[in-house]
Image 1 (cartoon, rainbow over the protein chains, first blue to last red):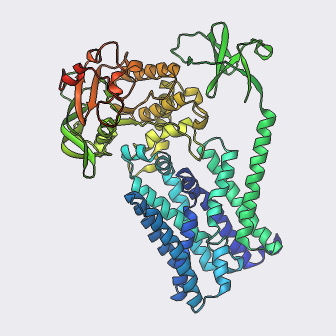
Image 2 (cartoon, each protein chain N blue to C red; image 1 turned 180 degrees about the horizontal axis):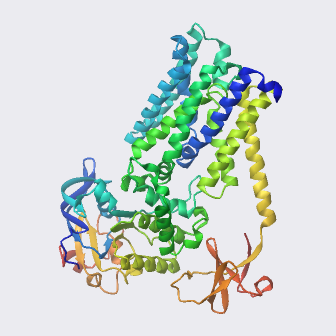
Image 3 (cartoon, each protein chain N blue to C red; image 1 turned 90 degrees about the vertical axis):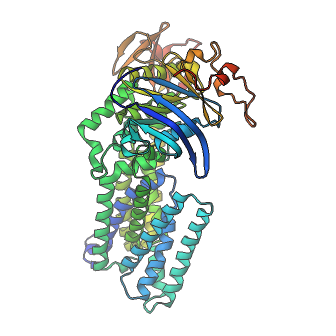
Length: 336
Length: 267
């Protein structure tokens, strides 16, 4: 680890990985919630046109890419909002047009070459400069603060757009903001992960978070932790294994996802307790249902025709001192 | 019915709602006062949903006036008075969310635009807890909504609307697709809302299930209101009639002629 930290470009790369590893899942969770997981991929395509313009005009590619993705983000949400048929095709034109234009412009740019095209597309550790890092840090701070402040609003709009609109939330503005945040995250990622792979870091840690968390908040915290660890871990691995950083990070994120899915499934199977569910239980017990209740440990049982019923998720369980060896034929044995 | 100096909860006069060039419902005259429980009945495609969307400001007003608590429907003030309970088959999405997180949305929509983080204050949290308790789901607050039954999810949606402290609840088919046991609980929950002083406007196919709380029935047919009066006057013994249509592409009608002739009936 010492030798890594003694190299300036690796210190820069690790910091950049930390920034993108934390930002990407934070933005990505709302894309997953809206069922737009792949929009980050399209943004990456468009950003390449911005990079090309930067190289051609000898401006910072980070800044030109930022301008292009922000414009694209606004265009995407307006297209969606207007709901025109053909909006989908317009997106395809924008995304592939951006990618193709980027490749052509970079080939013609004075400082462009096949090597740095590959770097922008798939990430290259040695390309992270000090000035890039400063720009990334500012952008990541903007993303983190915006999501932190507006998380409830982003959640509400992504969860139920109609309700949010009917209740007076600025739905279109919130959606444009999310698209802009997605674009900014794509730009932050362009050195370490690459424009073609960044979408994976927005989505995969959230897929893992869904296995590990029990709430939106809990799942998101897991996703940020997983995103940060796989991003930094991928950079370190890519340094020692001499592999491209972006692809290494993504493979690591997939490995963590598979491990989490297997682990959680195995733990659930092991801790699954046998219990008795009340059969064909149409009546719904609650405070006003008229059945007496008795305290049973940390919950209440409802006394129902000589049985004790306790709520278990979406059904009712048979409880009682002898329910574990109850063989009443009217009960069905089930598993949870 | 309440006489007071405060404006009616809902006041439509000659209102027409639609989308783009298409007017779906027109000539609507309807005044709803505080504490009323109004069932909006009518065949599919008659304009019930458009009426509700118009009240929410989601459909365009093409004519007349529509006011909620004295404010133009769709204005921020009008929206602040409405608790919308949409028709949803499931609350589950691609990401996890607990019942409390869904209900918190009811507070999020009430935060001023310049202070969006405020939906996490202690007062907001206790309102969320209280709302879940009112619908009888206090003990499931931290459960993933995807694991709840359909009826429980409806109660989560009602709690979400309740958390926004509305004057009037607009409910779109709240009892559709839930079993009879849960329908009874939903009706009990609605009764609690009424006891707390709420006004309910319920779009429904099942007046039967809601009979004990509904104080007034409004039938929307053929793009207008064809009946407005006490639910008992809606052909006793058969309150399933309202969801049949007598028009072209809809199922055969069984609407009693009494309803067809009571246009603009007792208010």
